[in-house]
Image (cartoon, rainbow, N blue to C red; front, side, top):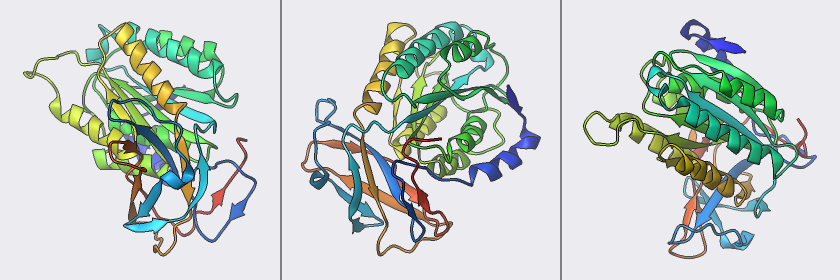
Length: 313
């Protein structure tokens, strides 16, 4: 089990700045990086739309239309799912219900889909602890979940930054699922640090926000807004279920989205690539009334070559 405290964090930020998403063919392109986008499409009623074609989409990079080089409908690229479980003191009452629901999600995730799907587990309170690195060993993950204890503050941003270092360089799709009851209180990193690390890891964030206080007075509105922005910026979503079956349904909805995603990739053209510049990306669908969700952009880097490993690690 790994444990991270603030004095060690700078080292892991260096790790988080390196790496790139490996995807799906035995090809090496050194001239420019492929930009992979995981895209979810819903109709006006909120139903998932999974039957669109490549020509139905338009991709803009800083306002410049791009040629789509890679397109997969309902992509089965392997999933690397990082679970971040809030174990701050305020979660004590509901932690068992949360971990039980998380276990049920993991059972479904690892028994369906791609045989290379894997999950890792972190807990976070005033410190961040790696409970399990990426694995398909369900008993190992469930054992770690059962032994989580609630105490201390909430270092959500630290957890995001430190966990994304393990996502970088893995093949396929990168997903972070945060189970928490509120905002950050004890992180050394800031909100913007977490956003940068997620973009550099090409990760989509889903948040399951179990609110201990539901009325306006006493709620951590700032924390809720931060999670909403973080998920939207990466192409994910916030769920606000009650404990019990509603939480199971939130996990089920996340898995359904992951099984209905499009994978769209392009090599930026007529766009200068630098190591620091953030590129704004927009994906448009074929008609009005469709909600197209993907990450808001990426950090260009001329020295990051796209590499593909056909699902291998």
